[in-house]
Length: 219
Image (cartoon, rainbow, N blue to C red; front, side):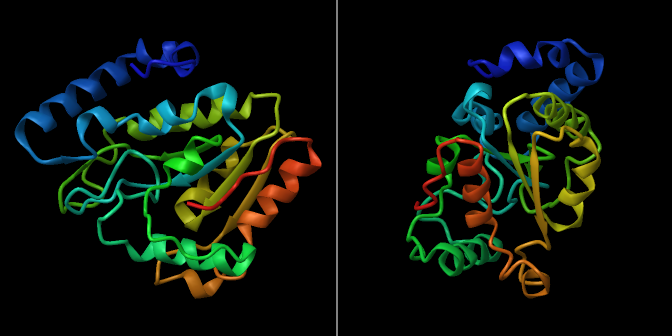
């Protein structure tokens, strides 16, 4: 399904009835409608961040539903596509936090390659219809992914932005892991706790304290 170490950890999920039904549903949707991300990019978060490389999880909710935006990574959009406001606010906070100049690039693939799992709770969406693939089974799958990561002995930083992501905190019970949470970077909530929350420096401080290589947040 994915082509790296995740397949071993997710094999049990693949064989569950809900997952088989989910994949059948998704395949039919791609035949009949415009679905994002492209079918071969649905599992990009896992492909760019193998289990053994995992240091950080940034949890999103839904893929971007605008034309050609989503690329299978939470908050990330393809380069040369208009930057969504939430991503712009992430970059603003990054500049404020670590004095990293706002990039002209949008894709967060460089983060993923360093061990940041950019995981949406739902991995597909109908064009121009946000939340259109909720409650089809994706949430069960990604909740179980979080549970699998929770069992990892090596420390992982979970970055939870917004009430939906923060609701997943109950799945993270391993004391080895570190949770950073705030309001969502959306323009509707960024000024109510996201700006000034310094998630990037906090992540690196924690990784460094555990003897783990820090993240280079430049895009």
